[in-house]
Length: 351
Image 1 (spheres, rainbow, N blue to C red):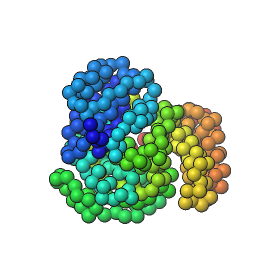
Image 2 (tube, one colour):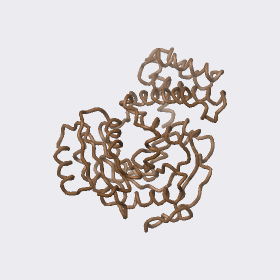
Image 3 (tube, one colour):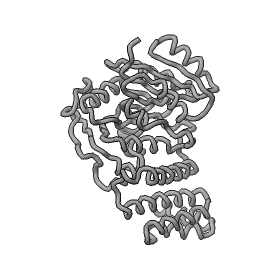
Image 4 (cartoon, rainbow, N blue to C red):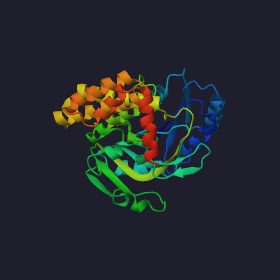
């Protein structure tokens, strides 16, 4: 069997309700020779039976099963088995538009210096009903933190860069191309299930971090990818992102975990790749201050007052001035009943 052009990486855990639709959306991609690598991360529902049935019905599906080890371990297993020139990521509760890979591969083939391309996305509810378009910048607040309006050196219409699918409106779609490594320090800009990257880049980046069990591994992976060179963003929704699933990361405790993961990634990046970071010492200090501010804010919201106080102090130390940290610092010192009352008053004042 000849090697596929694209290897589709599908980690799954207890997603039997949505897995079939996700896999079919990959198999129905236009004009693309592909393989679909499904790694069942120890599901306890009927996923194994469904995966076996899917694999029996289509030889392009390559199923694997492992003990429950987390989404990063499942993706890493699939990456180790991938044979395609390009790697695409698909979560087992999302849905691709049928032209997704055709569009992204066309861009990568026309721009050999670009190693990764991702897209916008629309959001759907668990029952598949759409509820938000162009959801990427709403979900990833780092887009609002960028110092410039766009992080890309080149921003043009898609039709000027590559041939696209026969989909209404794609010619007017905008695409950004450039090295955005320094902009990624402000937070993640890339949603993994929209990504296609060259396998040679994936080999250079290495595996997802399996120690980040509850989130943050995507940011670390995409930051490392952007360190490799130029990337591209197509401002067209190519997937339907399913929200409202029970174990999606939404609550305050998980936000605190994300904040800690973000700080850890920044610290490791500075330690291991400072020579590649085009930032002054002052700019790095400002980034570290923001990272500590985030932890302080989330800690205060979860009642971890001593932790909030500690990180607010560290933020002020990095910044050299109190900045916005003083608010969290004061809240961490006030009795909890007082902070709750102030929070309620603020909510009433803004409604």
